[in-house]
Length: 174
Ligand SMILES: [Fe+2]
Image 1 (cartoon, rainbow, N blue to C red):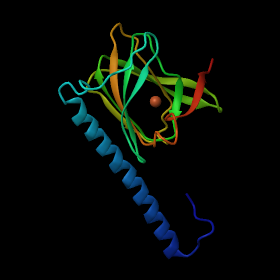
Image 2 (cartoon, helix red, strand yellow; image 1 turned 60 degrees about the vertical axis):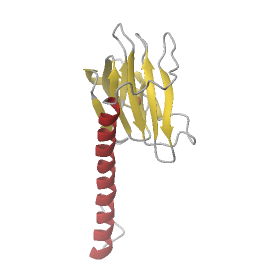
Image 3 (cartoon, rainbow, N blue to C red; image 1 turned 180 degrees about the vertical axis):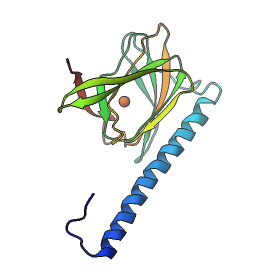
Image 4 (cartoon, rainbow, N blue to C red; image 1 turned 120 degrees about the horizontal axis):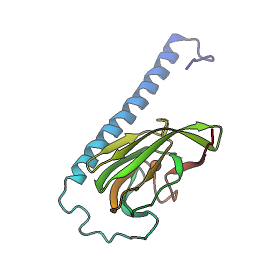
């Protein structure tokens, strides 16, 4: 990124250092979130004291923890449940606790359509952490015959916004 208004070496260098620090802090957060999720999913009977909401056909989000910086949720995925194709306005970190989830990745085509680029089946113990600028347009679905449960940590204050989703997309037909 250029600095067209700042020709002086000193101020430009200081701004570049600040940018590097911001990027480093974000990566440090992602590493910590990854480690935290790894610890959580190794806790025996992690959700034993949590009353999980379940619905027969759609996934349910169950609030675990949140403050001004982040929120953590247990998501219960009945067989056949799926998210929309979406991206996030915040960091998105998740771990598969039980069952398996298929994650499908997309590239945007225009403002509201997306084309599939990759997919993978995520087994218990799988952990992923991404920044909004990942890019992170994806869809998660439980296409297995057993319920799945995942733990998600989003970098947003659940009290100020209802959802971590920034934008939803339609599958583009090629
Ligand atoms: Fe997502």
